[in-house]
Amino acid sequence: MTQRASFKNLFYITLGAFVAAMGIDIFLVPNKIAAGGVSGIATILHYTIHVPVGMTMLVINVFLFILAFLLLGPAFGLKSIYGTVVLSVFVDLFARWFNIIYTHDILLAVIFGDLLTGIGLAMIFLQDASTGGTDIIAMILNKYIGLDIGQGLLLIDFTVTFFAGLFFGWEIGMYSLLAVLVNTNTIDYVVEGIKVSFKVIIISEKWKDIRDYVKNTLQRGVTIIDAEGGYEGEKRKMLWVILRRRRELVRLKEFVREKDGNAFLTVSTVKDVFGKGFKRIK
Image 1 (cartoon, helix red, strand yellow):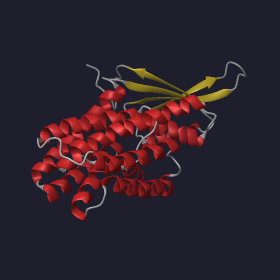
Image 2 (cartoon, rainbow, N blue to C red; image 1 turned 60 degrees about the vertical axis):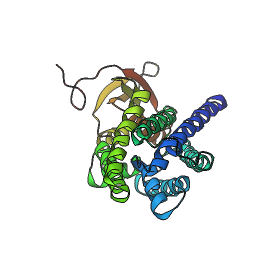
Image 3 (cartoon, helix red, strand yellow; image 1 turned 90 degrees about the vertical axis):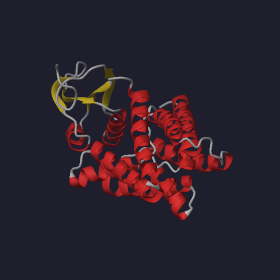
Image 4 (cartoon, rainbow, N blue to C red; image 1 turned 30 degrees about the horizontal axis):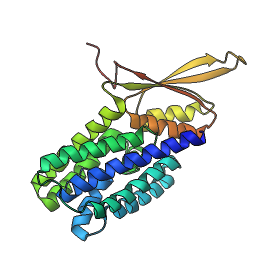
């Protein structure tokens, strides 16, 4: 990666963290909306034991990164660590700058708070980075008890919103659950567009490890194609994968990078995908 491209990545990760932190501090936290994930956990702890939201997010994420390194291996890049740290810092800075409630209408807070956080997180995902968080817990649950990653994320977010209802009242809990749904759909819309999936072609000497990762961790199908290099005439295996979400693509690219830095990988978008795990052919 060139220095210019690296600076561009960091700029957009920083900008995304800035926008997401505004949504958290201006709309969600002041109205006690725990919209799932680490920020939701930090919001609950902020009002129950009076700790700063950003610092709590950072502490939880550091613990999760260490846990991921021990249980999953070094699957998270420096950009994701940077995104995690800068988001946490912005959250605590903005808590001082915007220390007023901009709206008492909780529905407005959910909509505008999640639009800002969703757009901000989407900008980070578009740089092939993340902000750590409960994705790590979902991946650990997937590895050790076989729970689907998407179901794991949903279970964690539902648990956070349940505790929000327990501590702040069930009406706030229901609004927090609504916030989870708005946030997820905002990220998907911004990052993926409407009905967009990703076609990934990988040629690597570590194709077996990558195949197993796609099947067992991402829980996606993979087609293995016998290929021959046109330049040297070498026999190779080519993996053909379709992914539904940008998050899956980020994880796959990071895994391939860790396993084989010389792998050949192409990514293209496809508008419609039909078949098992996607849409039914009508």
